[in-house]
Length: 510
Image 1 (cartoon, rainbow, N blue to C red):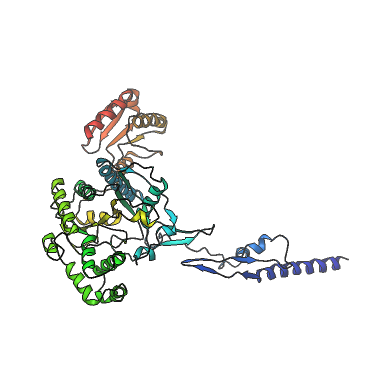
Image 2 (image 1 turned 90 degrees about the horizontal axis):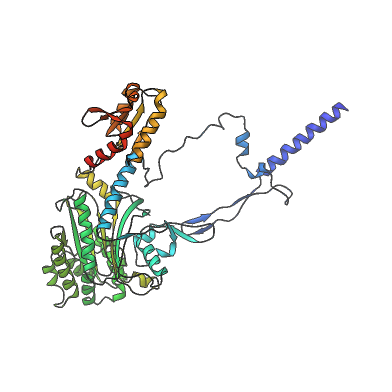
């Protein structure tokens, strides 16, 4: 009987192992559905016998490797510590730099009376899939979400702004002056100052159809440059009007509905030779002789020279002349210049366009913008005058480094570092730190029992202004020692007077 039971147990065990093994050999793969750049792949594992519950063993395709006794199969795979290509990690020094830059942008926006807004980083893909050969359409991070909706990470902010304005159905009082600092995503070739994700300062004016809007935006841009230590010797702003090209194309007999597509292609001439896009231009009805005449016009660098090739009553010339007069009134005349080659690559621009550039030619375009009166109309809304600019974070930081005017952000910049010389006084150190924080100071309380040498080195490394020492002798007198780390001076301050002291040094430092 014992031999029979043993044999039956062995047989049942073998049958069970065979069942589990066969389950692993029966994955059923559904067909892959590919929509654009999106694909979904569903792996189903079925137990033999069809219906019933799936066992955890069958559902987990990695079970064999998890239960294997082979040490080599259980070896841990090293984590790739790099962020995805084209993206960045922001350690504390980089975050301090970003906070400083964003504050600079916000201060300028506030000075010019703009209000901040924001929108989701994930938008409907249809918001960006405009026609006319724009690169942005091919650079989308897009996919189908779990609800079957085609969505994309925003490559720019202006379409989101248009959607938000349309959502209010005329309920927003005009003129509208809004700004934002969104994170944008584009799968594009990376160069210095160009990444696949970046933050971008946007300022937009809606409801003003005059050139005054562009002049105000250009002035705000220059104000930022001045505030961060750049001059007109470092940065210039090229200005043109899409209407210049429009008037030339009209003379050449090109239909108005092809103007935007032509401008998008002409913008590529800065990167590629004419032969590379000649086929596309000819597809729009532009013969080579017409293209050559157009490119000749784009070489003009003064309003006077462009006036000679445009009609006497050219609206484009009148518009540009007034803009340069307003720039003189703002005191930014030495920053701006006319350049007929600037057309900007987005199809929705309709009038004046501008582009800030590095005068030394080391970096790509620093910022750009223009007028886009018909954007709302392309989404089914009413035509609304609008102008704005976008200003990326990566390229301006590179420019500030290049000119050696970027502040250091290595240290945390605490106001005070507080530490107790003995564990018995740690509770007192907490009270001291709390008083200073209540007075508005940023305070780093040393949480461990450290030697004074370590604390002073830590304070210096983080560029703290003061070191507040809680010691036995001073505490007996109701005091703490405060060392000014920049002056090297040390003095005693009553604990009850710490808040008063903190406010005094704050007003002195400011």
